[in-house]
Length: 314
Length: 314
Image 1 (tube, rainbow over the protein chains, first blue to last red):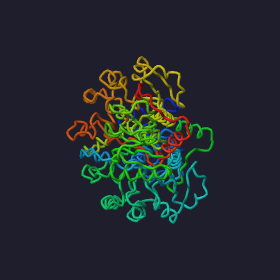
Image 2 (cartoon, helix red, strand yellow; image 1 turned 45 degrees about the horizontal axis):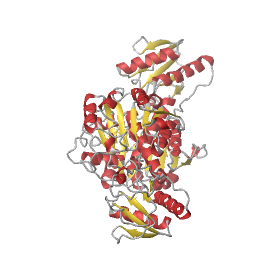
Image 3 (cartoon, chains in turn brown, red; image 1 turned 60 degrees about the vertical axis):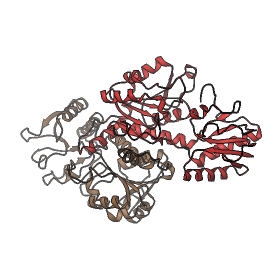
Image 4 (tube, each protein chain N blue to C red; image 1 turned 30 degrees about the horizontal axis):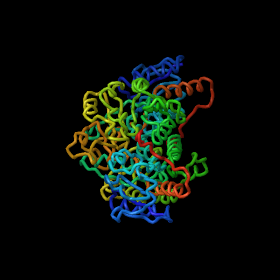
């Protein structure tokens, strides 16, 4: 089986991926992107440059190593009719829930406020809220939204999980979580949320959702945790909301432009905590096993896992 | 029933305590510390000034509102022969476990490193470690140590909990936690710990435990989380260990002198995260219920809860 491996990795990162994939898929002959374009059975990709997937004949599966495929789908030369699979890596899902939990604990207990106070050598105890008094709204009921909502609920937070489409309203809610859907329900949920954790896929209908109107629907001093995509957030509207006190603190992992430009006001904003798109990384050790499973399914003619609906965008 | 209420509170804090105690103990007549010293059945105290408890006749219980009684026991005029009860507040125990979990997640996932990077406008992804690859050592197997160890183990961390006295070696370990005791076992546990969470009581045998020798036994770059008492830690030794890289980061809630003096090097140290003795506050709503239960036991002649061994110190 010949498989194209095509991604934009750091040197050390590429070594880790090659080692993990070689171990999980011993029957595969790996073809690199700089080889002459010829027949391959599948492509394993990580944000390939536009056009990188055209001209390979026989391609029957494009397997992403990343969970989000919005950039991949923007490639105008993306071969049509070839199934695209997203990565659903259990280690990445766990890492996302950890990041959301860390951010939520810090918002609930004032740890970001204490960090601000430390910079001013200020000793002042903040009111201690219980988890049960700190309702959280999780946006997104996919793999990561569901796992995160369930993990937060297990810590004692009242958790509502919201999906952008009414079509999912009947979907089984994660344990301990109230699931809801549609724009009207969102307004109600926002009015009660002390913190919002965004884990939506990026689609035309979710782009720009976190805007002025969204922030205005929150109780004062609420926390925003954006772990999904930069384009979900209207950055100028968030800055205004932070400065007016409508939003108390924001934890941001993703941005319109990444790496975030050095002169961006988020870097030095006292009410913004930044992560460098590191809330959850795909772990080569477990992701390579997922790749191997889909390649085996392809050979055996079995149904492929985590295939993307191109029209829906995820 | 006449009960002395004697503590050093802020004005707003005192109001919250008075309201919660009045509601939980409707049969009590509360006596203030500035009243003429006369007969009272019990005293409810929160770090009372030295001598404040002498001269009250009929005193049959000293109930602390705080979990740590080391300062109370230092009072040379503390009436002898009167039982002293510590506060064991379920909300405070939960808050302590939350703080330990927040600090542990941040150490495991590099969130303190990202905060340092943010101050330098530096975009750099750190290696992502799984919880199962991040062994934690919890010092102390009392109420708070046990609850914290169990909560961390439930998140997937390999947790060892250590007690300073061999006498407790046979004590039931919290679920999912390896319990150990004695100095020899401590050396072994330190050699494997990526993070240490201190929740020991302060006694002559635990004072100064976190010193140069202790830090030298850790693997490089380990995290220190001191949530117990400032005197457990030799501050100069920690600063040296941070500067040499023997310790990667420290989260400190308690200090030799509190509030921490404005010129103390911890305030601005890039590898120290400070909390103003706020890792876990007693919650008047639940603590007042605990007080009411012990006062009821006193009236009914039933065994009192959480009585301190004055010789042992906790």
